[in-house]
Image (cartoon, rainbow, N blue to C red; front, side, top):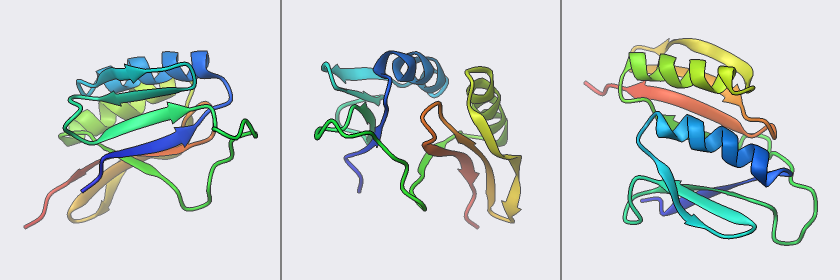
Length: 124
């Protein structure tokens, strides 16, 4: 259903260092790299996450209610992603834990304040 999601950054080099290390934990890497935008994923045929300097060159801002959710694959995977993000300088927005019977998640803000969720969902 999703092709890609784009989030903004004010410092591309810092964002690349963060996302190269973080997304390697789930087997993703930069698939497309241009000066102002980088696309991460496991395949160009699967959903991707892009980080970019906004096209209008205005400062980026984080939309209230906007969040990118990254599957952890398991509860342990969620814990690992959360720990890696925190190690890389992310800000805690909710430690790993069960949020409802079918959802285990953790929340952080990246170095630019973009909200990320790492999750595992098990439907009956």
